[in-house]
Image (tube, helix red, strand yellow):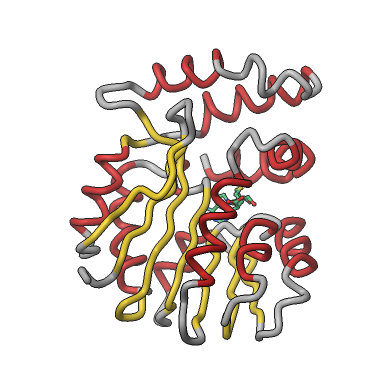
Amino acid sequence: MSEAVHAFFSQWDIYRLCIEHNTLFHREVGNILHRELQEQTGPFTLLDLACGDAELTAAALRGTKVAAYTGVDFSAPAIALAAEKTATLACPRRFQEQDFTHFLRDNKEKFDLIYLGLSLHHLETATKREMMQHLRCAMADGGSFYLFEPILHAGESREGYTERWSAAMNGPYDPFPPAARDALREHVRQSERPESAEEYLALAHAAGFPRGDILFTDPGNFYSLFRFKARAA
Ligand SMILES: C[S@@+](CC[C@H](N)C(=O)[O-])C[C@H]1O[C@@H](n2cnc3c(N)ncnc32)[C@H](O)[C@@H]1O
């Protein structure tokens, strides 16, 4: 399963098309994240899990009080791009070429902020539950965890989601070459295991995040950005 995800993201060009055509709402999510990071009044550390090329996070971190950046991804090309994109940040940077599930299981550090974008949904529900617990342990007191993921409608099956997603490709994905459209459809069919927003909120609550907010959902109800606070205030 993670081999298929790894192979898909090694074809970075296809994912680049999604970013350039904003089919995954990176622009909106990036703007919200930027505002959130700007509101941090003191220096903060950020853990970017499944960082990809870190384009979204590097832009969101610009002009903020970031004191240290850690990027984790199991794709070597992604890590190389992330190192380039974050080069202008005036803080120490660390990159780890590793499966983020292994990273989290071994991790002993605390981070003020964590961002995990478009990757948790590749895991089975039980592993998502386990990762939520590790994520909670990795949070500094008062910190926030931002999770950006595809979401099921209430009562929707994974197959129902795949059909809904494939039907909605018409229009936004028209400029993509046919082979890229086919590869994306196959990736969603084979590797995506979305949960409903309620399930993500419940998993986080069970892991000890007292508060969860949905900061963004796209007009088609395919993706949501969640913020889980490590303290109730
Ligand atoms: C859809 S991109 C998301 C990139 C970025 N987080 C964003 O929000 O745009 C997925 C990235 O996560 C990485 N990835 C997926 N599953 C992973 C895992 N289990 N461990 C580490 N990296 C993973 C892929 O290599 C790819 O670079």
